[in-house]
Length: 481
Image (tube, rainbow, N blue to C red; front, side):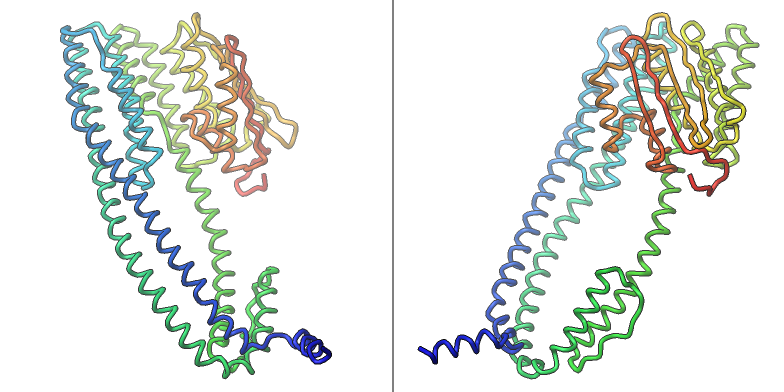
């Protein structure tokens, strides 16, 4: 009895040796093997799901593209020629729903952009159909049919073919990847497990004596790295080649990690400016198209003075839009830009649109992203003023407390229902794309000022909407906001 207790005490006081741990590791090799096998099966299942999804996307898009253009073109022709009174709104709606569905399930970036283009073209097609319906002249209808409808449906068809081509490439790539990954994983896993078993069994006794100290040193070094110490240091000296390589690799990793972190910070800053420039480069092509149409109409009706004023406003608009290539402009430049934009729109909507711009001249040198106000004003016109009988007024104002610049865009349009307003606010918080106007303005400001910018929307259905922007007072590029 005493001998048994003494043996148990001796076992408890003597920790398991490295040799014993390595032998135990050999017995436990079946566990990582099972993990690798499950990983292979998981990868196979993942790629099969992707393969099935891409195949379904191709089938759906192909079935749609076989009939869309012919049906829409034919129905539009019969409508213009007077043979039918039905416009193919249902087909366009179906095409948009299909594009939205493909947009949700398409993982490829190029395919995603292609479907985004299809969605945009569907909106343009719908607007063009409305325009034809509102046009009385048969010749003008035929001209719009040929220059708008046929071209847009052709572009939609071409984009769908482009999407099919991209998805076909993705499908082929997934199929190749499935074969390569599975075969490679099996070969590598089998080879590694076999080599590990042989090497571990052969080197167990030889590495036991000299492994403990280097492992402890390496452990201490890894803990330092975990605490954020990325300064280059001499590798741990070890007799074992694996430990020495591991130590050398850790120090090389630390150096590369430190350099990569610095590079990533620079890259993030560059991408931030690029994204800001990309968002600011967006402009609604319908604005230019409709403005030129309005100028032509004014000239044809003999209203040359109004046409001349509109041309001057358009020139001022684009001069301020280009702004010598600057992406960040002063509030005074932004005021000239939005004033010229509203002058043009007031000519077009003279019976329903009025505006007031009340800017304090002392704030004129404050810097803001170019085209901050236009998307908000555009939303106010198209979703507020135009939808309200009798029209309304847009009021734009600013104020400053010395540190914060406040901009307000207020309209007396139809307002926003409570449910829709809640969705808009939630969408902005979650980074969702709610349409060009609100989303573009919000992203510009967030990219430049981050959390120091606030973007508030308030509205009363039937009375109007007010958007309030608060940003830091900045007068020099590079100044801390």
